[in-house]
Length: 167
Image 1 (cartoon, rainbow, N blue to C red):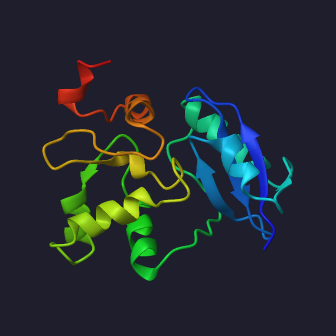
Image 2 (spheres, one colour):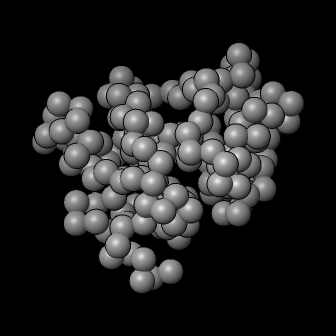
């Protein structure tokens, strides 16, 4: 399968977005965009195929979009996909803990597995893994780095109270 991609400038740095043949989003990375593209030898830069993603990301960062309306096609296990589907249900400006997601998925003991699936989310921002925090309200791991997670939550007004003093 050919990866079609584009690089997008954003307030949090360069983003890499990739789509499949049908135009569904397969990846959105907030870190290491150029290195990732270098690892995709058959990737084709196609800004036109990624135009809808660019538009919605710009609206998000411009404060005009609170949810995304894009076809998604992430690759993962059935469990990972169930976690990613639960992430999409977290409203703009709100957070959930790994444990809360595990309970929502019907497996209260699976908070670590939820964390692992969250960490492998290939479509950040659109599938909002940045909205997941530790049970005590602390910001925990984010593939793009905790500073980016903090900026995304601040943009949405969802930064936990304990973290607001750090900005």
